Length: 451
Image (cartoon, rainbow, N blue to C red; front, side):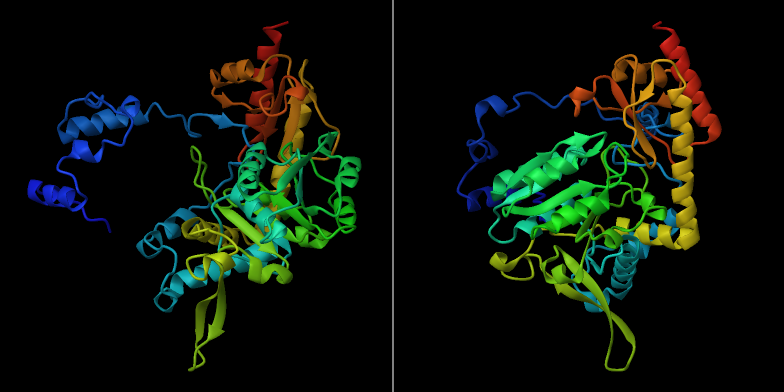
């Protein structure tokens, strides 16, 4: 815990210790143009009841899903969270827990992490999972760093149907590390196999695709695997909507070496920018190169079950030059929420979740494509998201929808300008037939107003 000096004498003593007499001398290196030469623009202090009333009024200006019906996905998904999840996660023994630096007295949290890893392996069909990462984008980065190895060179081939934010994060790390990111063109909303085949070379260290991809369409994952196996590259599958694994084959079944996933939709609510949960699973061959740590199960000298930190490959635990990653924490609370969520749903419930998302999304696409001016962009199979060409700019369309209490689709024109006016709609099990029909009627009304 940081020490904060409370008295003027203590402050003066600390200033003298660093060789200055005043705060102004301490701040002298700060450039003048960025220094604030006026008081902060804050209102006068208020009595507590008045302050509470003011803050409640401000909070009511925030939009939330209690007031809107949302059809927005694009990496963060609105799923129903059973009440048991927040009730258990917010218990004090969990809510105040952090990374288990002292495993011998962190048995409960270590067991929770171990259960999370077990469930993540069952979902992905891979051999080993670490104790979570920051989010899906950094999980993709860690997969690329593992693939390029200590040398940090070579090519990483990335589908343009990978989440644009993930690609941006990957490019940032590639610039600093020294490897090259090469993006693969698309064909009918999925990775072009011809482009992949042409790009593969002896310099290829990893091939990264997303399945279902950013447009919600399904990739030909087995054909991609066959091409990747012509080289020594690592086959990485990114998943932003793990609910899809309720109906789709796990990546381990079609040859993926690594899965880098976003776990937000498994028990964590939507937030403005987070929090998120990175899931990283791999084949056993990569176990000692995984970022972060792995919790394991063992027995003590009395034969009692105990949980341990089996592997800790981060730089705080071993020499920096031997560390596989500089990841410094794990999202223990969100991983716990995922574990409770999956346990509450069970195998059958998780399958039904996947089926409900699939069926409702396809019903929504049928209703929307029946509206004049709207048409599906791609003909490939999709899961719970689909791209639609729109008769007017998506920003304008979404503004009109918000006036009707609806959050519309993601505007694809920013990241894929070649698609023109196009929106990415998402439908999960939380959207009813009435919600979908209301959206279709609103689109028809808005489109009719521009005819």
